[in-house]
Length: 150
Image 1: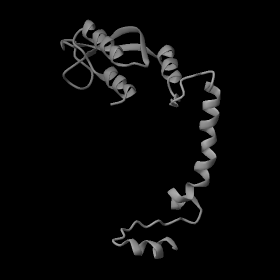
Image 2: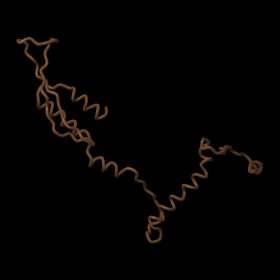
Image 3: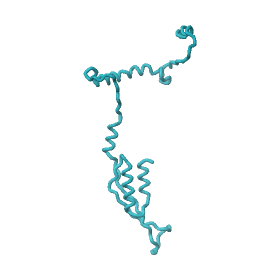
Image 4: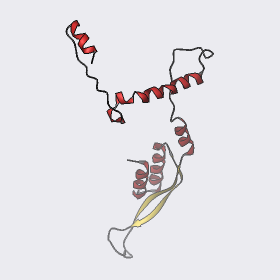
């Protein structure tokens, strides 16, 4: 269940004492990474067994509902945002003077043009004429010459 639905369900849950209501919100806030719960309190209501207006002799049941101010945790959100979009390029060249980081990145980005030009071989849906390559096995060496002319 998503945190906002959990929070809404928690607000509708009645507790028998004030400490149970506030502890439920504290436990909820510890489970959520990106939500900060502030100003935790419990709202007391009286409920009766019968519907309608209660008689003067009816004894009400005290029920406590949690309330809080819920905010997005900016620190956790920024931390998550900063770790998105990273990638790693590995190379065998360890000498930074011979091949700088910027040169490695430019060489990697240069492969994009090659990948685009051969996209039709990989994906027939890309708009170009698909190149259909059939794999087959040849039993004899003499059959290799007629097949190489295809």
